[in-house]
Length: 194
Image (tube, rainbow, N blue to C red; front, top):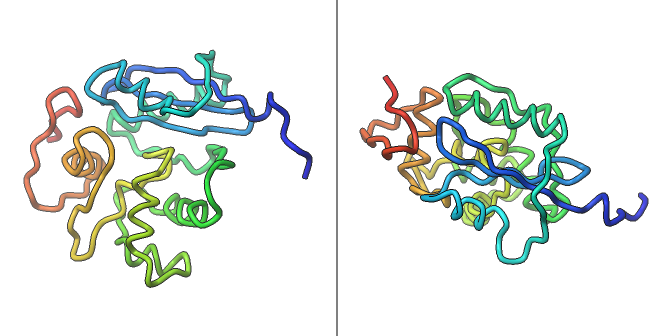
């Protein structure tokens, strides 16, 4: 495999408005590298997307990223979207996390899986905590649908995005999954679902 050039690994990003709020995406020549769900402010979303050590610049999204942005907007409008054709660049992710993310990408719209079940599927049955850590570090939520991974007993578990478990519950509700806890929507984060 040839050594990647600086142009291959250079990352660019942009922010865009959705029904959920301001979302950020970052990409390299190889594919989508990051997706940032809305923070409380546009600047917060941008800071979290860029992270403390990521070297990336604002860029004009190429057609494949622009299509992904449209799909993300559709998803947050409640449309069922298949993100599986989207090419991801997970070069900075460990092999173990990549395996976890590959299995997670197979969890379909409206379906869920527990941390323990996901651990078994990646061949690490004693590692549900490691699965939870991988979900917390997921660089591309929604596309790698970590919101569909639950704690045992159908409990919501954690979620590292702004709003935490409430946001996770609302994303699941958007897909028709109701855990029965009556979580109200966060104002401005997701529209009330009927």
